Image 1: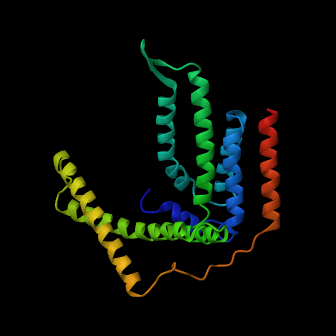
Image 2 (image 1 turned 90 degrees about the vertical axis):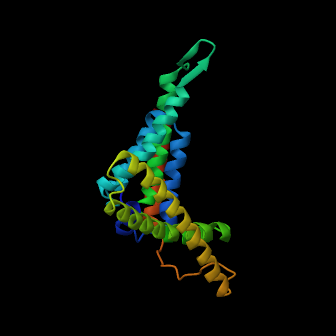
Image 3 (image 1 turned 120 degrees about the vertical axis):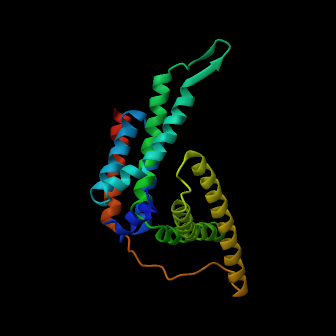
Amino acid sequence: MSGLAVDDAAWASAWRTRAPLDKLLLCGGLVVCALVLPAWPGSVLVAAAAVVLALGPARVPARTFGRAVRWPLAFVAVGALTAVVSLDGAGLGWAPDAAARAGSLVGHAVAGGAAVLLLATTTPVSDLLTALHRLRVPAAVVEVAGVTYRMLFVLLESLSTIREAQANRMGYSSVRRSYRSSGALAAAVLTRSWDRARRLQEGLAGRGLETGLRVLPEAHPSSRAFLAATAAGLAALVAVGLAA
């Protein structure tokens, strides 16, 4: 992905105007189903439901959803590989019930990841922060999350500007220069992030700000029809998963 494509998809989603707590209930329910239901067919049904909801009613671009799920899938594949390999006195080999264990691990992880990605591609972070306030999450936790979210855009802009300057100076013309430029890029972005954080802290302290940054939240009324459909859908998933 380039930039924050998931964040752009969340702002452009057809579910943008739905209440964040409604979407939290839906995606949280899908995550719970992915954890407690058997991998077959429970996790498969949960993953399919999350993908259908994202590409269908929520109108998330399929390209964005597919590119966003690549790195989690790679992480899951590595985790599955390490879970099925055993090391004992006889050497390296397959663990007992390796196929079943790998299938269960991949199924639960993919289903849970798809449910979380559904929330990420339909709900902007600003709406999630407001919902966390309403759920009585500690203000310090919400404040740190909000500042981190704002700093991401500054760091991405810095990363793009520095890398473009390096490319214009032929910093990536060879493998050796690429390694050197990448190291300089990481050091410059890290230094700039510390500098921006320090200046932000000094600016807030100079204004006498001792509480969180309060903003006027955008009102998104809850939908009883959506909640009823969520409850019915989750109940159906649980019933089918347990019955099968």
